[in-house]
Figure: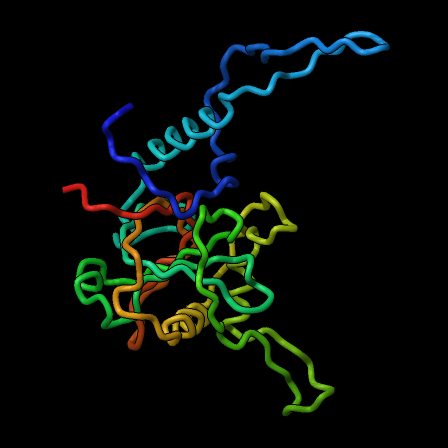
Length: 248
């Protein structure tokens, strides 16, 4: 057995892994077994113990491929669709209600991790599907107000999505279990809506030091600039999230 350190994953996106295919090679007939039935014989593909090993090898290959091309998430000038690598203390949460299938990873609120703030100069918000979590249970939090009613509070008013509601809806697309493997749509995220979402998560009390240090790779959804009141924020959808150990 190798003496190398093992990696402990928190999140692995099966959907993103399926987007990566090796270069075409000569077709190799899969191993089959011959079953004899009352009406003749039939060939079926043999189940092999190598399936899990192949999956792990594919993850390793994709991780290496992305890692060779990814930029540091705090670098300026990121564009939607680019790959980034990250390492940060992260909280993992879901929103109470209709969007519990979406999982969010968020770095600590301002003032909680001063060294991290100095190193990065920006916030990091990752959005993914809870079905891709690996043995990890996120905390459930109350999100921002997602809907409002036009008409001065009248019961006949029109229900509309708030700015935060539009952002949550946009981020959740592609993570809904009824839309298996749906591609992440290109959307213009409202900076105000993202900040309302972040502030709602920040407002939930969390014990000091409760954010675990994690690292991984993610595809950029949006790079939102700083304002007079808020820091720059990188929004991205992760391929992998794992615990970051001190390798020194």
